[in-house]
Image (cartoon, rainbow, N blue to C red; front, top):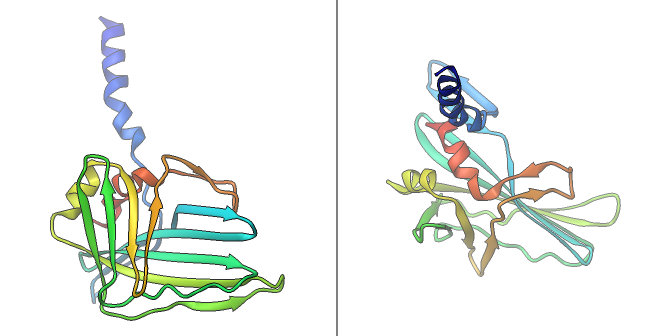
Length: 188
């Protein structure tokens, strides 16, 4: 009997320990309202032939209005073309259950900025902010994401979201497939 109770308590406690903690870069509550912004999370990393590209996501809530911030960083000694966001840009997330979730870009054009570092590399940093469509958050909380497609002003790029990434940049382990399942609760 004692072993059965212990086993039952152990099984019931697994979901509690499986939850990811909410780490915020901003968490403000004042007389104007509330603003929460999660830390950036690596969802894609490519390093090949002297070129590197990284995609970081962070979730924000401004007085209960949820958005996804996407930061793209490209690094190369060769020319890096600009991928611009505009009012028609969209982010598509293909879920493992077959559904496709669409996020709409805010009506703000952005082509990022080009920065040259001291080692002769050009670094292009682009940031886009996408709004969730009603009902899409529930879909994202219930299934892993396999593919992310970003529609820019002049092109469309696909990114396969892996189950696990050990970043070559900082050595940390990330779980892009389950990012939304683990962190959407942080902005609700």
